[in-house]
Image 1 (tube, rainbow, N blue to C red):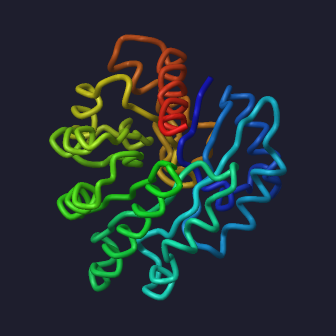
Image 2: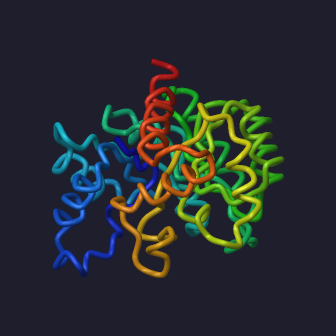
Length: 262
């Protein structure tokens, strides 16, 4: 039913599960989360995430992963993400997307040019593999949209959307999907709520970005994929429908995104 399009399964706080990822996986299944994409931020994470996907992917939980370098990584790591290396690492079927890539000027401003060059390379790898991009965008909406447009990117997700409707519309016009995290449930996130209200329903996704940004009523605690129904519930309240309706809709949207070039 529910799809978590963005979670860091190798970084979850597993304290309440006695350190066992299997506990978090069981919680996902109990919460009716039937698909999740585990996100990679550094090549050093690849083997661990791929092992998680291989171990826990079964008939009740469809797991895949992304391949990419987060824009907040060190310059040397950003530069290591050549188009050739991204393609070689991401060509397997269990890799569903390219990213998390993008621009982050909130945490990192001294390496803007390296971030921009890395994003462009991720776009080129995405185009060659025909796999969607996973875009991180923080305090960098103008440059992010400009690069996506100039490089011809038209297939992917603006993950953990934190901007206004105008920015969402520009991304939608390029062909991107917009993914809402637990932030949409925060009281002060009015711009994000307004954007969610105006979203075309067939281009909307949900995520946890766990272990970060737990939604209300779990805010302040470590986040996990089992909490993605709370994001759906917040949107459902806006739309006057059930959380299950939002879960089914966003699951179908993710399926359409993955199938776009296949």
